[in-house]
Length: 259
Image (cartoon, rainbow, N blue to C red; front, side, top):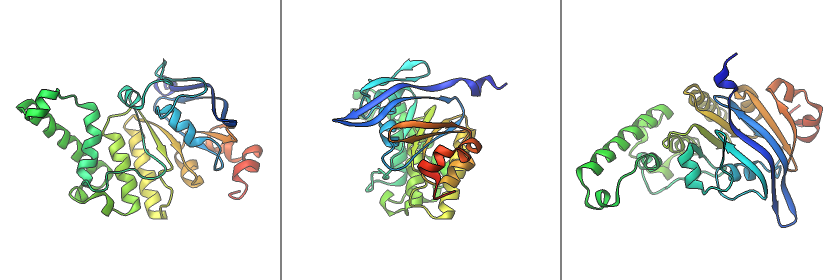
């Protein structure tokens, strides 16, 4: 048995999230194995993005715990969670459109490089050396995601498919152990979806654990090791793709049209 893959890097325990009288998540429990790709699926309003927001520190849950590498993180701020080794993308691409492709990735690198206030303010050699390393790291990431030739372009000049790749690249720049991808294939054509799927598998092959929210069932079934299905904030199924594909509750709640 591969003991590395069996180790849980993320554990969600008895998670509850309410907004006023609305129950967005109810007693949610699941684990993510280190080195795996785990997908979260469910109808619109099932609580998927709320779950991501809790895991990545946008807001704390009403009840329950989130553990990353056996340490509770549910009440940490987003930047502290990023420092621990979790990064994310968003449903709607969030880039600095007036900055270049390279600069967007370099911003992600800065979370891993600490430069003192004095060194930054006076542009000392130490700061220049770190800036050079950041640039080199960002260029390597652009090569990995296939955007090297666009490094001087403004981010908002890219088509949607490349913007999504860039956002993933920026998330990778912080050197995460767990990357949370919120609908990376949304709005993409078949060719762009294939590129995004291939990139996700390549990221995972580097040892980075992937937690994925996605509506494209072909993507989910092709790349996921395990799937959690949410409906009205509750988990109704969990398991490998072949089990989820044949689960009657899942078909009734979500996959009916696909089936």
